[in-house]
Image 1 (tube, rainbow, N blue to C red):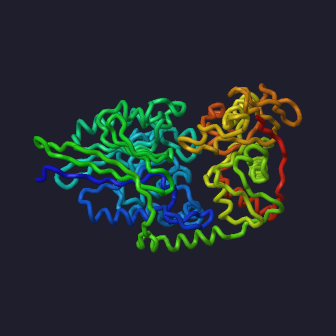
Image 2: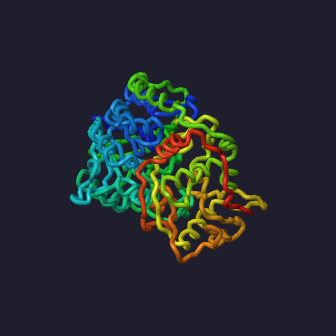
Image 3: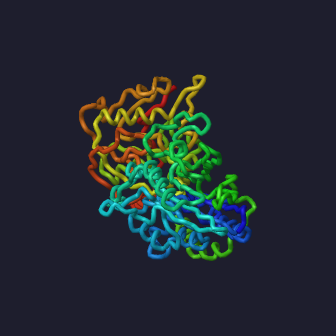
Length: 523
């Protein structure tokens, strides 16, 4: 028996449906995705005897490929699962976006997997048991090394997800659940190595320990490292950051998003008095530059990819005038025809006259004169549904004030508040409203920036209620819009917005680019 040994761990997180090395908005090749990762895993498998491969969630949603699979090919194997089966991962963790397509798509994905799904804190309400798989697994490695892998998921999911998608589920606190399982695993299994895989991120600055966001429970990784004894490696995700560091003697990693990088961990072990001790922990992130895609995966994806490309290139409608976005910042400061278009779609679909939307991504380019499905999905990349809430004038004012925090003033110039850029870009948390008029004064103190709010020419009445249409993420308070939480739901529109935009173009083949200037942002 050797007195020295080592373990290599590879992991992905927040792949978001990126199987292929391609950016679907433009169809350009890119060094991303599971086809490239598969080639790396194959190569490392030949070199390493003690290899563990894990995915940390947000796997099955996020690209047109996956939207197309769910709409047209959901009776077939989920391509992301097919690839992970072929890669031969040891386990995956449930991510919050796993729920976006509803119960059946997620259940099918879990059933099709040849690997277990871990999430110790997502329970079946009736039985109290974990819903998707075991809370942890044990891997017995060469040289008799015993490795425990436990998985937990951010429990903040009910604040974002459509209620129908999470029926019958109980989301327990990820921190307390992990704390309790680590203790149990250490006592019962006595592993040599304990790896925790957490679909969640960090709530504090890694250097200073200062809070980087409100403590809602969405991200608890700092607290996990600080307060839970017995974790050797904590794999994180959800925030789309690129991190590798050591915090309170716990090796931590986070490999970004969309299959741009993977995490690699090296553990050196030594046998002393009959027990294995970890003598060294190293973590690094690697990109896929100069990596050839795995041929087996490319062949497996051939039909699905070809079907997706055909679907994306179908012309859906036409624009008269200019609906292209030249500057995302300008499109948020002054009403843009593309934003007007999204508001119009939401108003027509819901039948109410106050609507809320945001420019979801700084990569959005708006619509050219011919609109294809590719244009729609590259501008509206989330499978959001819509809800109509009953809100008081007071709640509307509070939500407008929250949006107004997006701006700040530097040297008498309007700029984006840095907290919306780092540690995670959150431009989608700045909302624009339709059906009311208002002015934002970015120099005013936070909480008193929005003035002159009117509805149909009359001042907004803080005591009466108004019906407002907005996406399901925001309607549940997502983005720290607490004033929208648990408000009466008048109507739920259970078609995703991409589908609604497509249907709108079917009714109005040609759409005019125009704007109603209903808001101003001043220094």
